[in-house]
Amino acid sequence: MNLHVTNQDHVQGPADAPVELIEYADYQCPYCKKAFYIVKDIQQKMGDKLKFVFRNFPLTDVHQYAVHAALAAEAASGQDKFWEMHDILLENQRELDDAHLIEYAREIGLDVHLFEKDFGKDEYFQKVKSDYESGEKNGVEGTPTFFVNGQRFEGNWMSNELIEYLESLLK
Image 1 (tube, rainbow, N blue to C red):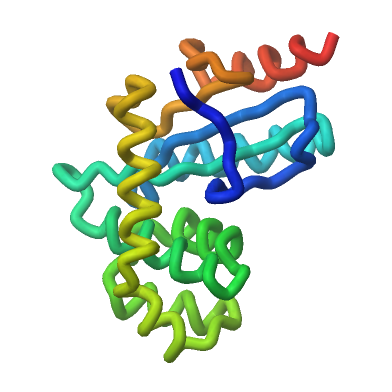
Image 2 (spheres, rainbow, N blue to C red):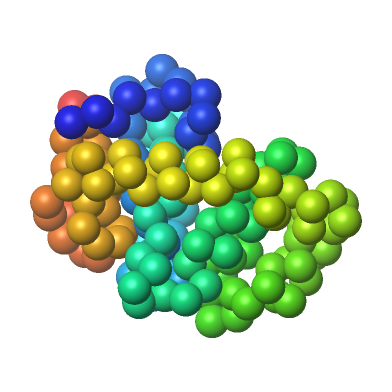
C-alpha cells in the first residue's frame, strides 16, 4: 500500500500528529455525508493528535455530479478555500449541479470568475484522477474508505468503533 501523504494532499491537523486518518470519498455519496459529520466530531475530540487527509474517489457510475463536485473542491483549493468548498458540498450534496457549484463558490467568498476559469483546468482534473488512482491501488472499491496510520480500517465507522480505535492508538 502506498498511502504516503504529499503536499498535493488536502490535510487538516499537524503533520506530525500521532494518528493519521485518510478518507477516500465521493461528494455525492450519502454515506460520505454521514462520515463527514463523524470525522468532524473525531477531529474535535482528538484535536492536534489527529491528521486528517481527504482524497477524491468519485463513483461516476452511480453519481452523475461526483466528478464536477470534486473539480469544484479542487478549483476552490486554488484560492485556498478547499475545506470550505469540501464542507459546503457535503452539507448540500443533493444540489451539486454546476449552477449550485457556482453559488457555493460565491457563498464561500471565492472570486467566481476565477473559479469558473479554474474549473476546467487540467491540473485539477489530474488531481482528482490521481486521488482516484491511488484509491484503486490501495484497494478502495466504495466510499467512504478509511485508512488509519497506513492500514485500511475494516471496522464499522458508523458506530463508535472508529473513534475508539483511533483513541486506542494514543495509549
